Length: 542
Ligand code: ADP
Image (cartoon, rainbow, N blue to C red):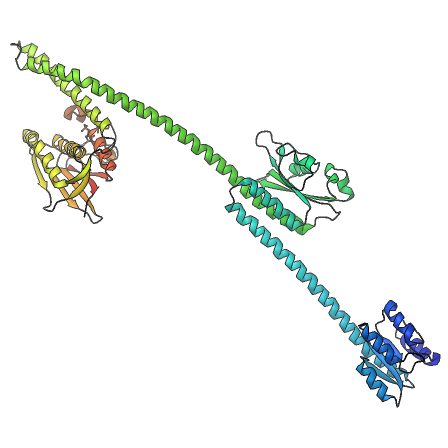
């Protein structure tokens, strides 16, 4: 209150304002009022316009030039309206005519203070909003960071990089000054320093070594997050690095396979939101660690399978080579032996007694069988891949094969027929190998057909630009349970039929190998006692 008249100031300051419970500072002149308003920072100034020395108007001007935001109520005797108007122009907020009346003062003060209170409330709300905004901003940053970690876990394959990212993100969202990751060694069970940010050089040398900061081991044991700061932290080694620590376990199931440690230099406790955030980071770390373990296991498994496969391939190759060599080596002496036996049986080397001839015939049959076996084996080893691929008309290959078997069919009382289209079916094949395929299928069909049976070789285009060849008979058929295996090497339906019909059980295996090597497929439909229909496909030229 700026008033030089003690009677007026007593009336206003003590009787009115004091009674309203307000704290009042009374000064007598404008110059000291200005000083006081800076140190006392009043909510309201009541000033007489008519002051000795500087006037109330000067005070107003000074206040507004210093942008002191305080409402000013002017007291002026009636008749000074001109000055009052000027004071209003300078920012006065109200005017009380003197001589003053208590009630008028009280209501003017009340009015002015109401605005002050409203302003203060507004200010409080503004600050609150600012804080909320700030907090929101922080949350967004935290969640964005966390989202980044989540994405990295599935896309970053380099584990070191991932660890760095996890530590950086953890530090960012918990506002830590340094951080490290300890990983449990699968063999020793000890926790090793696997990565860190901002560790002093002397400690950084401990990378991949067992690590003990005093606190982590507690978390490894309990499996629970731990936060410590100030005095409580002082008992532990870690306190030489900072004053607030948080350790979160990275768990797989119940066991902590790693520990994430965050440290603040200042004694500023990690709160529940920091904990929640770091635990989320730790969950991501856990996913990535489990992934890494799975990948490692898969890699090892793949490597061991690969080497096993290579081993078995090389034994398989060695076996094949041996069979090939043996069959080639056997063929020449066997052909020679058979030639002599043939000559003896035919009487080319002189007459034989009946029992001698019988014995030699048996030897001749056995030799034929062994030769068959040797030739089949050589064939088998030879047909691994098609060698001389050329365009051929499949109809011609089929007809030639039928021609080769006419005599044998006639002997067995089986009719051989063809159902081939007029248009050429051009296939890109090794004709010798295709010849083997036809031979095997036709000879089987004749072999397993009764006297009076019918064997038909057919060919037709399919809708998916292939040609399908069928060799059908009405022979003994094959029961369902054998159908899956007859294309396997050395598989024969049963021993007794084998004895009856001869054969080695490799014909169909050859057929399948040759056809698949040509990009086709083989198949069979059959009913016992009704007959079989073997078929294969090949890509055909348009
Ligand atoms: P092999 O005829 O030398 O025994 P294959 O591999 O050619 O060997 O045939 C395997 C087995 O499949 C034969 O032993 C026979 O049991 C059965 N098989 C093949 N073709 C026919 C067919 N047309 N009719 C009935 N059974 C067949």
